[in-house]
Image 1 (tube, rainbow over the protein chains, first blue to last red):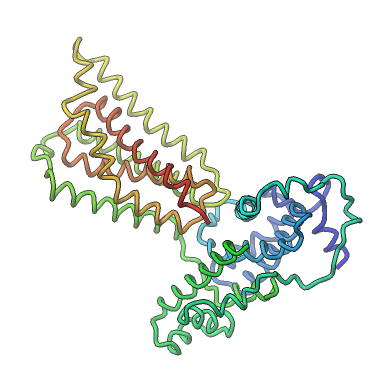
Image 2: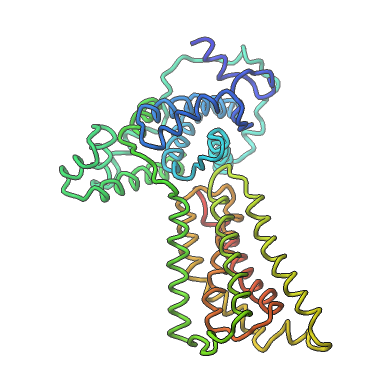
Length: 208
Length: 211
């Protein structure tokens, strides 16, 4: 746990870091080699691989945003969750010929710039990035809960979308089972899930 | 909801990603836009009755537009994906235009003295770009809609690429009606028409292509 925390909090300037720098997006970095195989399997429908890949991505995203948002640490987990949701919704835009990290980094960077735009970039620019020693940063043990609760936002979705998400993504029914339960076609269930998640992502973005 | 719970939720029953989903989405929008523009030409001004007898000039024209469609389509694909380099696709667009410029220059050089002006201007230079820009509108709307569901790093660039693709598709429909045969005319005025659509796409894209 200690090493994991240290890894997350590695500063941008520390180029000797053996691990991942999301901003580089190099094919040969450590994350790429770990993520590549998982991602390819996830794209072909391997749920366990997808879960592992997203878990790995979440940790790295948290580090990426934390390094850039020292004065707004409370917003970090919100942004991590919003970015994860975007990654999921944009899965189709990943080109297997390119590094997964380059794709993830572009999404994280886009989300971060969007965050700055929404919050006024002045606050972020005042971050004393180089003056704070890593060991002085308070590393609080917590369970990475966002302030905006996606679980509560789920309740606000239109009934059909909420039910489709609850059936498949919470309860774990197959699309066919969810279709049988709701009386809709399988493609309708898929569309409802996708639209519902899109709406959640839009809410996260607008309420931030 | 904790982040790990969100991860579990997103992964559960996620299913496979449809292969080539981006290409298919863009191709569907492009095809629908082309069909709409073709219907406008057929129902409106009508197809040029001499089209079949045009021969080599028509082939040159269609080769240029076809290559532009492919290059602009590639650029739109690149611009719609996070982190995908688009330099090669952009270079292919430039390459297509340069190849046509070479052909246009060759015909201008070998033309009899005093004819260069009419080879460039033809008889319809003042209407051709506007016709192409108008015919590109259905594809422009559909393509921007498609790109909006994707993740362009720059709305302006992706909008420009989608507009260029829509412009090339509008030019393809316009070529059914057009009677011009000079490659120099096609190079200048067809390209201007496609560029109008591309600029409109960039202006709209910078506003609407947000995610």
